[in-house]
Structures are given as C-alpha cells and as structure tokens.
Length: 56
Image (cartoon, rainbow, N blue to C red):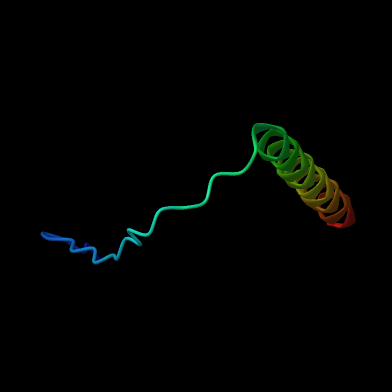
C-alpha cells in the first residue's frame, strides 16, 4: 500500500525571552559534562545491543 503525503504543516512556538548568559567557564564545563553523559549513555546502549544480539 502506498501512502502519499502532499503537505506537511508544522506548528511551533518560539520563546522570545532572552536567555541569561552563563559565564564562559561554566558554559564550557557544562557542555563537557553533557557531552560525557551522552557518550556514557551511547556506550551503555551499544553494550546492551551487543548483549541482546549474543542472546539470539
């Protein structure tokens, strides 16, 4: 069965309030922390997928 989509509408709202800037040191530190957390989650996900693949 073929489904044809002719028009896609996306509605969104943008918050126009200015964000308070963080000091450069905190911003870089926070960015590295988030990057490390994401990397750890990816490694855990991949390890689980490998375990699941071996169980099959």
